Length: 282
Ligand code: AMP
Image 1 (cartoon, rainbow, N blue to C red):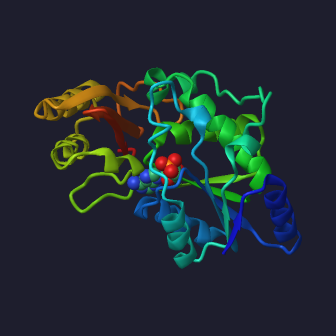
Image 2 (cartoon, helix red, strand yellow):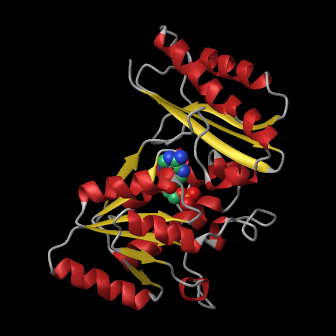
């Protein structure tokens, strides 16, 4: 496994791979890797002959007062896991190369970036779309794999790829959970044992929506009330949003018969967690 830190070197490696006819599969991450990330690597492997994983904690997507400084950084362990998973290239650029002094160009997916997490984390999705656009220009992937865990991010990036005619196919991989239902997240390490238990309410609320939808309830407002009732059973959960929306436009739905995204965000202590569920069309 090659570890590349230099942007030009990554671009040259990508160019060489393409000349040799390799299809490049790309998994962008911020490191602190867990089984969720590794599932994306497997997905990339099934689509492409050369897999590149980036590890870059992107300052642009963290707001003032957020956890950029304390975000877990476990580079050595990450590389060991990626090597065991058969990854060919880890791309880990220094921040000064990604954002040299005077860098002022951004990619902003207007509208979508201000919904869900974008509402409570102003500038977050602009940071995400900017870094992913840059990484796409550097790695030049044929396929890029993202987790359904970050459903709003998927909507923003799909729109970016479409609007800017980027020549890459986005692949979305399902949410990987712990046995008890908690969605894997690099931020779970912040939780105390008690908060970790409290956080299970997110998945319980989503399962309740799923079971109501399966028994024929199509009205989004009814499904939403059901989820809110479950969330209310855990007073430690500070709800940010619970929305039933179109997965592409992130606009609220009245009815879920055409399919819907049920997305939730809540804080447990100072740790903000997100989770979601895709309801298939009835
Ligand atoms: P991050 O390192 O948190 O920025 O995440 C990198 C990628 O891993 C993103 O596409 C996430 O959606 C994805 N991801 C994070 N957690 C999970 C999970 N539990 N299941 C599936 N994908 C995930």
